[in-house]
Structure formats: C-alpha cells, structure tokens
Length: 262
Ligand code: ADP
Image 1 (cartoon, rainbow, N blue to C red):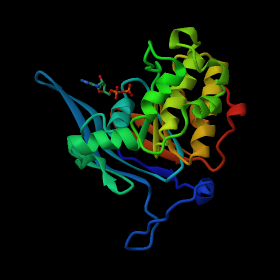
Image 2 (image 1 turned 90 degrees about the horizontal axis):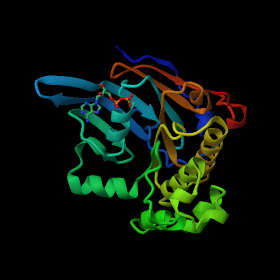
Image 3 (image 1 turned 30 degrees about the vertical axis):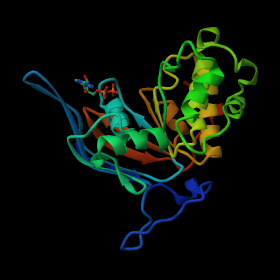
Image 4 (image 1 turned 45 degrees about the vertical axis):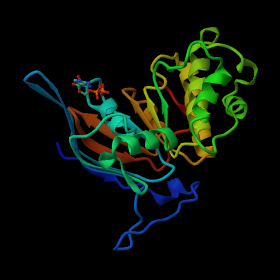
C-alpha cells in the first residue's frame, strides 16, 4: 500500500525547537529523521514474514510523533530499527548526520547509548536497584547526562528516589523509566506502548511527564501505540497496517493531554 501524506506539517508546530537548520541542495529544510525504502522481514524455517514493507517518512526535530496501528502492524519492528536494536534488510534510516541502517555493531552500540532513550510498556527497571540507582546506571554510560535526582524530581518522584521498583505503583515505575530515559539527554526518545499497562488517569499522567520532559530538553519523541486517542496529542501521526504505512497526518493543533479522553 502506498503512503499518502495528507497534510504537511505546519512549521509553526516546531517553533519551540532551536533547530540547527540544515538545507539540502534545493534549499529545502532537511528533516531530522528521514526513513527511505525501509524493509524488514523475519524468516522462520521456509516462511518469510514481512514486518516492515517499503517504509518512508520524515520527522522534524522536536516533533512528538505517534505510530498507530493494530497488533502485528509492524510498529515495534519499526521502533526497534529506529533505535538500532535490529537491522533492516534494505533501506535507509537517516537520523541527524547518521545512517542508522548502515552502522557497524560498534557504531550501533554508541548510537543506542548516546543518542536514544527507550521507554517500554513494562518499564524494564532493574528490580534490585532503587529508583535513583536505576537512573544512575543509565546516566553513567553517557557524557553530559542530567543529575538522576533532578530527573526523578522532574517526574514528580522526589519522595520515592530510594524505593525499589516493587515498592512503586505501575505509574510510578513508568515515571522512573521516563526519568531514566530522559536523564541521558537523548536526541531521540522511543516509547513502545508507554501507557499500555496503566489505567486511564495514570496513563495520562505518564504522557504528561513524557511530553513535558521531552519539550524541556527539545527531544524528538516517537510513541508506538494501538490506542487512537493518544494520537490526538501528537504533532504527526503515522498509520500502519500489514507492515506498511498507509497514511501520515500532521496535526496543526495537537490536543492538550488534559483534554485527552481514552
Ligand atoms: P506490532 O508492534 O504492530 O504489534 P510487530 O512489529 O511486533 O507489530 O510485528 C510485525 C510482524 O512481524 C508480526 O507478524 C510479527 O509476528 C512479526 N515479528 C515481529 N518480530 C518477529 C521476530 N523476532 N520473529 C519473527 N516474526 C516477528
């Protein structure tokens, strides 16, 4: 299925970003992310499963993007490729000055460590480390991260920094996971169903912290979800089905998370 761009993003949406504007040869502003002709399939015995087929899209620096689709549509595969956790069969993933699809293993590790923050549905915290230690662990790997206590304060967990994950609610654990991801000051924050395990109010609160922290640090955020309501808060929504993108819509007026209903 061919992708159709329904509405090109209004540049005013990204006014909050101090972009280092890069122009191409014809004077057009270069997008921060440019995915071109991306394909990924898995082989199980004789069977080939297409997980991503001819994926093409662009993301501006500082945008909040939602990738929306039902289970099996290929969303996590795409997120894993963007995050350097998997290798594409063909195509390009241009992010800033790098082509992620062409990096060797060493460069890929460096990219994952320094450029990307991850937030997963089930938090993935280390159970025998406190909230503060979980964040410290991530910050220690990079140069120029933010103070773990400040990161935890920013997600409203000042009083829980010495608690272990098992002593925290699901929403609190996800906020630790956001602090951990954001404390690295990543250029790109990738979130796989970040509210999938949370109730409605807690999910909204988590989205709020996610958006607030990303805006504060001018991070580009990509959220994968099957929940179409979450799409209304995004600057751009990429719709996926059967391993392909079938529609990309830019939102002139993304909904405030307070007005979100899902
Ligand atoms: P979504 O995140 O939208 O639920 P996925 O990207 O997880 O979709 O999966 C897309 C397709 O690729 C599905 O058919 C899934 O079964 C298949 N798939 C994903 N990962 C693997 C894997 N490691 N091995 C084999 N098939 C996979």
